[in-house]
Image (cartoon, rainbow, N blue to C red; front, side, top):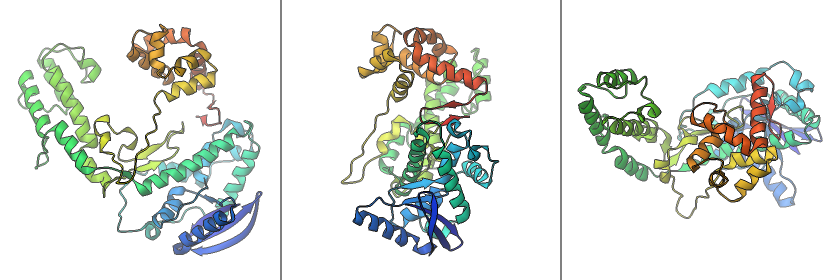
Length: 433
């Protein structure tokens, strides 16, 4: 049974949907919703039945408040996430749902993507601050329309599975937002001090960075140089006789001069200080929990995103600050080389699949004589998958095409279709653009 949920003012309207037909209705005070949901979850579990499938416009607006009240659900439908999939999906392009004009649902989704995250005030519960979204009739109509579109999908149930996974991801994202990631501020502070030097009490550069700045100034003969200003730094480098067009790492590495080593070190430390330094920790880590805003299906490719905190790209140097609580363990899922393995399966490329079966796909490329080093194998493979046609990756592409014509051919065909303005779909039906 599906239970469609929508808030209006201080009440929540609920409609049961069975086999595509709306049935019983309830009106529940917003403050009583956690107990009401928990009761229905418990009854189903006790009876050995499937738990209800909770249907709402946005998991962040409804499920996160439930989590704050201590209630978890097993199954859910995020209408907003699924709509973003279905409105683009080639498998339902022939349906009235896909052909219908844009509505407020689409506008709300686009607007939500632009709102930057702000740390939650833990003194104020989400049941105090949550606002209204689409009404119950709008949610009910959207749910039924999505069911009809999925029933008519032309990809053998793949799109329905994808929608289920997307909505489940929406639940997981809110559970992450609620629980946060265990993070040791003491470990992170020690890491920053070891890498950057002692913190300046007045907000200036940490000691090691400050020392590097003085060394760079001396080597360039520029006592007032601010190395954080790219135009100023380029000017100073040129005055020192270095023909540079930018301060990019790849360009500086090709220059033989004593200033390059400390300059590259400073730039690396400056990135860490800016992106994940003490100010970052003060803003995004509260009560030993790293709390960004996780967003399922945050980009058109389906990858997750985060609003604030740089949650998907914590630098390797600070990841050990993520520490399990006492009595718990972290389970680390190693997704290394996952994408090329998926590509091999999608393309039916037996040679690439065999190379990956040995464990290290990149090392296998070297053993098979495709490239000469593991680094080149990684550059070539990632370049092929992400459309890099220039530089080192571009130079290695002909070797990959000869070794794995089916896999690289699949990527080339998708890229060509995109260039022609055509839609490209994944196995389960996610479609871009």
